[in-house]
Length: 501
Image (cartoon, rainbow, N blue to C red; front, side, top):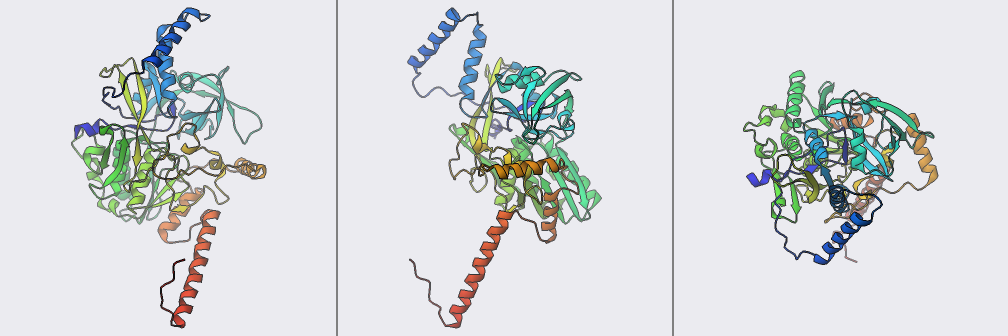
C-alpha cells in the first residue's frame, strides 16, 4: 500500500504564475542505469563545458551552466517536463494548498510569449479582465520573448501589494492592452455550489487541490440541507486545468460505487503501473477517517451531468472519464484538452527535505477504467453542446494537448485535434462574435451550457452543436429508412439474413 502512495503524480496543466498547479511529490526510486553510460557523448558535453569556461566572452558560473544543461535536457522531452530551481520547487509545493502570492493565472508558452491558459476566478488577473488565449508580450518594460517560461513566471510572482504592468495581445483587439495588476495572497476556493432552481443543484470544481475533497463534501452537505429532494446535479469541470490525483479520485469516488477502479497509470517503471480505486486510502492520504462517509446517501444515485470544455484537463478529465465509463453521468460540452500524462517531482539530492533543485518528469500515462488513454485525445462528450447558442466562441482558437509541439503521443487510439480554422471569413466571424459576447459567469442564468444540462436532467430538448445535430439527423434518417425496408421485407415474407458482400 505504501508504495502506491509514493506514486501520486503531478497532473496540472502548464506552469504557475501565482496560480496553484497542484501536485504531489513522488519518492520516485532512481533505479540503476540498465544501459551502458554513453561515454563519448558525455565527453562531448564535458568538452563544450570546458570551451565555454575558457573561451566565452564573459565568465560563466559552473552552477549556471550545469542547471541550464539539465533544464535543456528535461524540457526537450515534452511540454510538461521541467527543471525546478529551489524557489520554483517551493512555489510549486505551496501551490497545492490553494494559497499563494501572485496574479492568479495559469500560463503556458506560445510563439515565445506567455499564454494565459485560464485566470483563476476572483483573482487579481480575473478582475483585471485577462482572458484565456491572451498573450503576455511584456512584463513591465521587459519583452517576454527571449525569456523561458520559468523566468517569466518568476517575474510575475513577488510580494503582496506590489504591482506589475502586463502588455497583452488579444486576437479580438487591434491594439495591445496594457493593464497594471497588484499581486496579492490568493486563497483559491476550488469548490463552489448552489441550488440553481428548485430540485436542481450546481457544483463547480475550478481546480483539484489538497482540500478539494473536504470542501466538496461540505458543499454537498449544504446543498442537501437546503433541498433534501435534489432531482439532478450538474458537476461543472469547465476550464478546470487539473491538480492533485487524490482530489480526482475522491471526487469520482463520491458518485461511484465503492472499490471500483477510477484510473490507472502505466509507465516504464513497475511502481508507475498502478490502478487507483474508489477507496479511502487513495484519496484521503494519511487521514484515517473517510471524508466521503459524511455525504448524503442520495449523492450516489442522483442523476448527473458533467460539463467539460477545451480548458478541462488532467484531473478533470480523469473524473469525466471515470463517470463516463461507468455511465454514472452524461458528459456534456466540448472535447477536453487531452492532458493524460503523469508528472512526478523528483528532488535532488533525492532524500533532502530542502533540495537544491527538482525535476518535474513525465513518468506515465493515465487511462480510464475501460483502459482508454486520455493523452492527446481527451474526453469526448456524450452530448456536444457549445458555449453559446451561436457557437463555441474563442474556445475554437484554444490549443489542445495534441496541438503542442513534442507532446506525448496516445499509445492506444488515434489522436483527435480540432480542424484548424484556416478560412479568413470563418476566423473573422468568430472574432466579431467574441467582441459581442460578454464574459461568461459560470453558474449564472446566462450560462447556456448549464441551461442545456438542466434541460437534459428534466427530459427537455437540448440544443446540440450544429454538426452533432446533423449527425443525429443522418442517423435518424438512416434508421427510418432501415425501418421502412424492414417493414417492406416483412410484408413480403422475406425473413432471410442479409448477404455479406
